[in-house]
Image (cartoon, protein in one colour):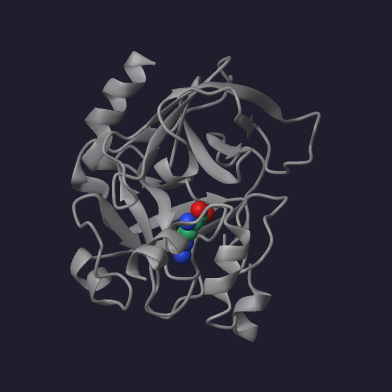
Amino acid sequence: MKKLLTALKRCVVLGAAALAIVSLQPVSAAQAAERVVGGTRAAQGEFPFMVRLSMGCGGALYTQQIVLTAAHCVGSTGPNTGITATAGVVDLQNSSGRVQVRSTYVYRAPGYNGTGKDWALIKLAQPINLPTLKIATTTQYNSGTFTVAGWGANREGGAQQRYLLKANVPFVSDAQCRSYSGYSGLVANEEICAGLPSGGVDTCQGDSGGPMFRRDASNAWIQVGIVSWGIGCARPNAPGVYTEVSTFASAIASAASSL
Ligand code: ARG
């Protein structure tokens, strides 16, 4: 059962399965009214590195031809032309503004087995001429307030979004995070938690693979996390769990240079 629950909460487009776990806890009226959960609409061009992937995940441009996403969003490493990346728009239905490029290859984190190591790279058929998002290579930015963005559900059990939503979530220490019900399996050096004790603001189903980021010392955006999992969405005492990018920065860089 533990294993099943772990699989369920990792979800991507596990519609029915996700609903099953979701239905265990009704969404509050306050939560239902909110909109990522508890967020607001991103402005066109605000996060130009954001990518929507056709399997129902997010991602970020690591280079103009490589998307960084979650391992649980993709299949095994190898040639793959089945993924379409959409970028350049906050409105996914803006067909004149958007850029769509197919995948050519997927690289899934070596050793990924559903616990930790939740990162993957997708090589695109052509470069996309948009700004990339640099990744944290040290732990120095693994604190403070983070921004998250995505086209995923705006409430637990809710629909995928047409417009990109954004929100801010505070860092949660490994010790604090692990103390919450359902989080004892946290892989402390590979995962980083963020969220409010009271809930209300979080990533949700369909945001997976997207970046969690903040400003660096030069005021540039820097990616510190990858949306991975959580118990429900935006519940109290149930933070979002993100892949700790700094831990994998050198593995990501060397994999990318081989693609
Ligand atoms: N596993 C989800 C997905 O595939 C992401 C869940 C994030 N959940 C959270 N409460 N932060 O889209």
